[in-house]
Amino acid sequence: MFMEPVVDRPLMEHRNGKFYIVIVQCAALSTIILTVPSSVLFSQLVCRQLSSDMNKIANAIYSFLKQAPIDIPFTIKDLNHMVFLAYYDKQHIGKDIKQITMHRDQRWTSGGKFMRTQNSQEQDTATCVLTLGGTRDLSFQCFMDNFTGDKRGSISIDKYLSSHTFSLTHGSLFILHPSDEETFLRNYFDHQHGTYFKHGNVFFGKDGITIGLAFRTTFRSAVVNAQTGQFVLSKNDAAPLKEFQKTVEDYIADSLRKSTDDEKRKELWAQMKNTYFS
Image 1 (cartoon, rainbow, N blue to C red):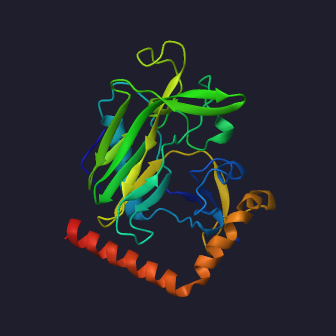
Image 2: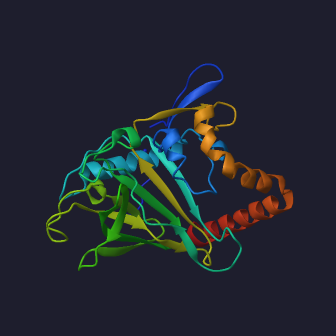
């Protein structure tokens, strides 16, 4: 579902003292850390309160959802969280590369039960992504679970309507309907097993920068440092990060590489503003 952008919940509940609480997209930290790419560390992520402009966008999307003609209704609540996603040539190789693999935002059991302890987004709520800058393609593919012993995997289904690709253009709003990710019996695809859709396979890099502002309704919170905005991790939360920590520390310590990357991002951002906002 798309809409033209129209531009009116705070992300954070402030506490006095050193820390404040921020609503986070991720599941319990000890769970989600194991699933993020090796190039992403919670110790390096920064949380900020939504600006007044972001609040306006969140409110506009909320109002749109309330009024939109939706064939299969879903729960609409305040959008209290936003993730800033930037896709560009991070490896300086001058070509498109896969930046997101196929995945589901929410976790379900093979029997179709919502795994609340391993999710943070409210059940039956939509993910709303506003695109800025270059056009990127987002692929959808139908899957079903496949077990090898006790190991749960998935296999794709190759039928008419089992896949689709959306082109996310500048100013478009993409709405991920929660039922797309839900595991249930879709008789057209399989009469005996539950199926679901994954999304991803985003290739981008050679054509500037494309940005996604992903708004969600979440119910979990985490403690972050009030001065830095970084997550405050317990020893148990931080343990899975050790194998990745040196890679990130080496990158941060390489001031020339980091400054070069920073300048490249600034250049891409300026080009995008001149192209799409002038």
